[in-house]
Length: 416
Image 1 (cartoon, rainbow, N blue to C red):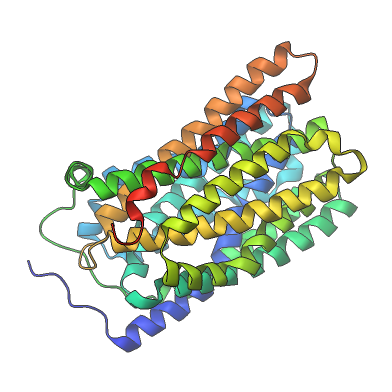
Image 2 (cartoon, rainbow, N blue to C red):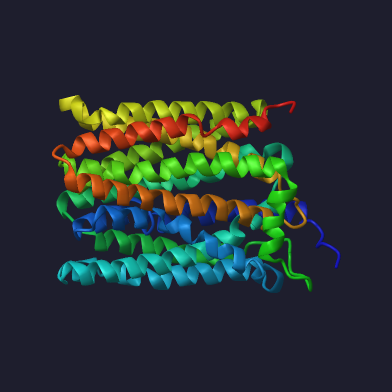
């Protein structure tokens, strides 16, 4: 069966506009139910470090389900799968809107219900991600990939900053009042539905099934893809382990209020906002490897600084804000470089196998790494007389691993 023809110029332009608008409301929805807010919500319910680690890797860990789900792309339109996944996520998040009622339950029951909601939400988000980047692949102009992703990520960073600025004010007046914040995020998710319903697509439906084994075979055939997966998974896995436990340390060991922790989160998205478009232009001009190397080494240096955060005294909060800001700047650059290389490795007529393989590889690492970190931290903290010393060692180990994560990506130096 012949591949579907490329989209027209007008369809690609419409797709880019709708993608930017859809992500502007859709990303705050998914972030609110998969990242910082659920971590803080679980801490308020008394969750252990192991459970927090499991939640920290949940959103990416369930990406492993995308491999068996690949055949769905052969049978259904990517737009239909995107809508289905988003509706699953909207339905699954409903219990979190009643967070006040969860707080009145016994902790084990409250944690079980909250985690079940977050788990089902992660499955819905995973189905969306199965087809999101393959959809975007059909809208690309090769010479402007970096700029496009700089623009799309800038738009949703603006929305996240607005959302978390409101969250910081709300939690300052209503400690542990997460239910209202989840409700606002849910409404943003609802607003995404009509936007993604109009997305054009280059079909990958075929009488020949797209199978998981075909995607896995790409790893054996493509050495550059293997190096890409190894380097990007290593960087993302270390980062996924550090961020949730930075929040836990700030909240439990340094005594930050929820509103103060959210203030540091705002700086996380502000760092992405001010740098994303510039990173896109820089990567289009200089190539990805320079950014891979600089982001890995720079992030490692930040983790070394984080290890001594507790010793900052009165400067602890400004230092935490500066850490999240700088870390976000570097992660934004790595992310745009990552996307550019992935799209260069992806055939435009059938992008789903390569993109899904990448999502699954990174997702498995990002799912397991925080869980392992949480189990180890829980065991060490149970015996420690100085909990901050445990966190200090954890961050130094993370710094060492992050510093070498770019090495497999040397194959993407320009001219090689």
